[in-house]
Length: 86
Image (cartoon, rainbow, N blue to C red; front, side):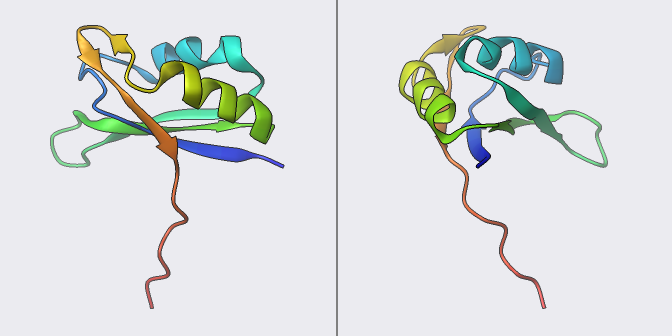
């Protein structure tokens, strides 16, 4: 079952490709996306990485949480489900 991780405090220069490259050594990735502000078209400083397996996601979270990437210590946590907007 796929597992999605939240990645916070990302360097603003980081791209989706950089994010995928950073997490790919830990297992098969379904998607890696940095959230972009729709008005300024700049990174909001966080993103999401989805792994094919929960085990790979756990390894990545343990290894990369609080690691320095491009001068910033990133936060890697389990992503929360999207809230239902009714």
